[in-house]
Image 1 (cartoon, rainbow, N blue to C red):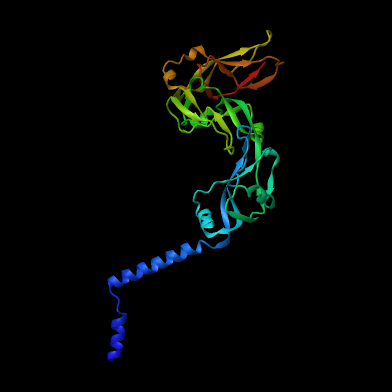
Image 2: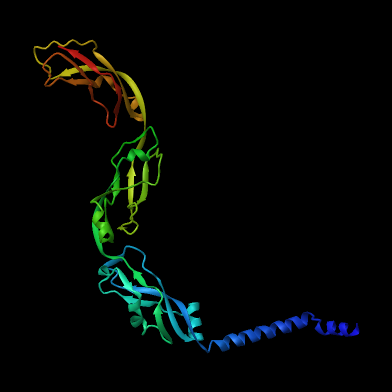
Length: 314
C-alpha cells in the first residue's frame, strides 16, 4: 500500500509543474516544426493570378480566374510562405490579343511561370484548362427618355410640365457585344413610385441585366411638375362640321353630357361654354350614322373620361 501511495505522490502534478510541462511541449513542437521546414516537400499551392492586357481597349465579359493551383516541389520554408500567402506576387499571363483567346491549356503554363516562381520547381498545373472571355471595348452615345411616366405616379395624379433630363445624353462604355445591342435611346427608370408632388431628383442610368455597361455620367438630373387630377361633369354644345348643304340632319339633342379629367387647380375656373362636342361628317353620304364626338376647346392636359355617342339621320 505504501508503494502505491509513493507512485501517486511521484505522479502528482501541481499548477507550476503544468506550466513547465506545457512550455517544454510547446518548445519541442516549435523546434520540430522549424527543423522540418528545412526538408524538401511536394505540394499543391494556390497562387494568385493576373492577366496582363490593354484594359483601355478590352474588357472581360465574365470574371477572369484569379487563382491557379500548381503542384510544386521545394524546401518547406518556401512552400509554407507560398501557402500562407506571405508576400506572394501574382503570376502573370500576358495576352497580346485577348479577344481571340477563349481558353488556355494548363500544360502550356509551366514554361511561362518558370521565371516567375523562385525557389520552387513546377511539376505540373493542376487546372487542366483556364477559360477567359474578353471582348473589345466599345462606346456609344445614348439619348435618354422616360416612357410611361404615369406608372411612377400616385393614381389620380399627372405630369403638368415637360420632363427635363439634364444632360439628355450619356456615353455608354462596355463590351462590344453589349454595346451593339444597345439602342440609340434609353428609357430611364425612376426609383420612386406613387409620386404626388413635383419631382426633382438624381436618377442612375442603368440597363437591366447589363452590369458591364458603364455610363458617363452615371447619373442625370430629372425634374417635372405633378398635380392632382379630378373628374368633373357638365354638358357641352353639339356641333356638326362638313355637313352637306342640302342635308337636314335629325338631331335629338343639342347638348351632350361629358366627363373630363382636369387639374384640381383648373376645375373651379372651367368655362364649359368654350367647349364643343364636334362630329365630323366628311365623306358621309347620307342615311344613319353613330359617332363619338371629339371635344374641342379642352384646357391643356385635360382628358375626356366619358361621353355619349351621337345618332344622326339625314
